[in-house]
Length: 568
Image 1 (tube, rainbow, N blue to C red):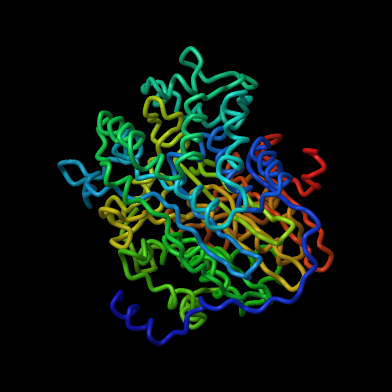
Image 2 (image 1 turned 45 degrees about the horizontal axis):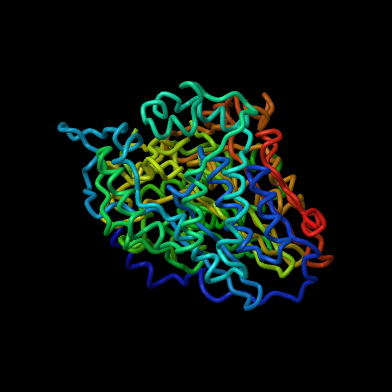
């Protein structure tokens, strides 16, 4: 089957390539920033007010989130950055995903019996990939920003020294990992108080984090990836049982890739290519749905068809997607309308298709442990940035003197074909572990470009990221605003397990019953998920609006006010 797919690449015209011309627009009247933490949003607004552009603001927001939201991202992790550079009308995708250490092996997380050892791939030093966030900060500032790194990093440095208040999301996520954090003295010293989760409102400081940012401000990425600091990181990781080397750090580079772009319902969607699975899945789902006129359907038949499209897109994710520098990923085929027509032919309008009837991987709860922010500036530059350390508080390891947690992104590889990762996602050889390879990700920073408005959006949420972005796009294409997209109720299907999961308020009892009657295993959860951040520019008026997810009340912040007036 894979051979047939590879040959088919020659027959299908790709949906990626040159950008469609865009009509003249009224420039944004102001900047807009939406992030998962008010401290980070304020840092971005401060940099915009000082004359920085969206990319300078992104440096400030990213560095601040790494401090105040350590459960979700930081210097020890990585991410994807989708940028629109207004001066030349160019979109670019910056891949700052973590890489597997050069000493990695395909079966490094299997026990003597050949079974996956999940603890090894999620906890401790062996679980950590080589971080990409420090390189991304320098890349943003040098290639696209207007201000020096020292200025864009200043808000985070100041906050690390003056202190920030421990919040409800910090506490909730730390509750899941308290024991693992307590087992690492350097991590415990940063995040626990007398061995316990700090009380909400506790003033937290991080002098080591400030010093690390100051080093990056002075020396750029080399201050992190080379020299004394790199030797300290490697020594700390190896002492804890990891396999990093100085060569791993010195050889790390961000990669600029062409974004994936396609049309749907009169909108242009610009989104993440592999090693993100998100853009391909979005294109597949929307191509499958397009001929149905689903936007005019009642909720239950519309949901049924959306779920059937999700099921098939996630099946393809499991089989075909991985790091394009290591595997031949059939993007043109998977994003073609002809391929979608073939998938559509197997969909019944009345009955769910059991996942075990789809050919693919033989196999058998998501937390907001990633973060996303969206930015628009007055020049029309756009930044959609999703960054992560994978599970809450990463692998729980802090190298003494550094001030940040390391990631456990090695779990995002397919440890063994058909064995689910921590988010229940299965994979095959395309996403197998290999030295220097980047693991497949669900992170899906996205632009929605219409005749009269442009939206920037994304969210954390593990395997549910893609479907949350999809539902946000539906809300925006249906005419909703930035806040409405962040508010929209969520449901999800990922092929395996064969379940339609939903937030508590997503379906009425009658709607759930009708979906069950169609053969769906409907699982209504007792909590919500995700943390979507959206900014929107009305091209006809220049108005900018921001929406932040209400699911973590009082934590995130979206602002489109005149930043300059705040900081004068």
